[in-house]
Length: 406
Image (cartoon, rainbow, N blue to C red; front, side):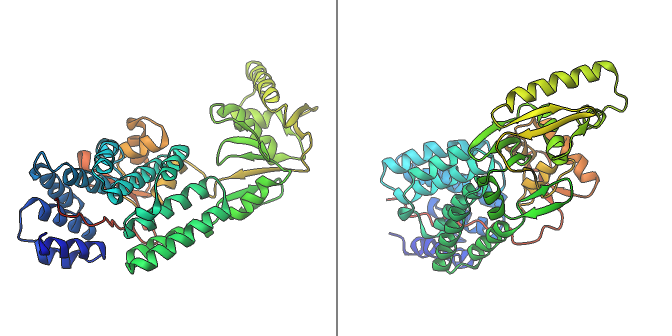
């Protein structure tokens, strides 16, 4: 085994890319190209890193399938950090299968963790959780264990499982401490601050109140009828009525919840739901139809009572009604929420994560750019978008060292 390649791989695993480059910077053989690519990625030159890894993958011979698969995994991690969530990320499954077939369990597990992280970013929580469940965290490279537990924490936070999220963050912190890599400790610190930050707003007729994740979990577990704008549903405990595909009905439910225990005037409902300044008879008829649809859907949870001036939400068994909203709302709040992670996103990745068309994503980003909320760099397919003046630490790429091919 080449001693310089081995030393460079160990330096990368320890988070020291400059030491790795000192050993392989002047070499153009495939293992050296791969290690140079990883070193450049850790230093932040992602474009150069991808070129080097691609060159290494082509330079490995047809019998060196394991080494080529490792290059694919490394390049996919760069794509993930660059928020290029399509394309190369879709080849991870094939690379992972090759690595498993040839006994490279560590890098195969790392490929699985990357796929779980990608699924979490685009909001496919069940698939991300299933992927994590198939992985053996003990065989992951030490630098990957922190990311593994951060993904587990992210899933738990989105599912509002406070104790599970706290336990995963503690494990991530322990793994980062073991690596002695400051960037990983910073990553855990940023995730912990997100965990402690306000997760939602409780809106009542009298006031608004910011809630952390533990308070949201307690509210959901109580006997309160919750109209949840964070997930677009109405619930009492485990009994849930999803309304994500019925925006008009959810707008009605929200207006009724915010006014509870009072009723809401028909004119107010028309303005908020249909943006109507003047209520003609056709709009009043439409309101009656939509109220009837909402009444039918909410029948297991509550009734909708017609009053002299409007409608009243009356829960069957709940002691009170709560309206839960995101901490920040307004135009394009979902896009800003994704960009708040401090990473550079492509418009196609944002479209994929939000379930909208690429053109729509580009129009939204252009509008946010005009108001100074986001900024872009690069051109064409290399164009990326970020929020301006984002506090905290950016995500740092930490790839496992590529072993030399046998």
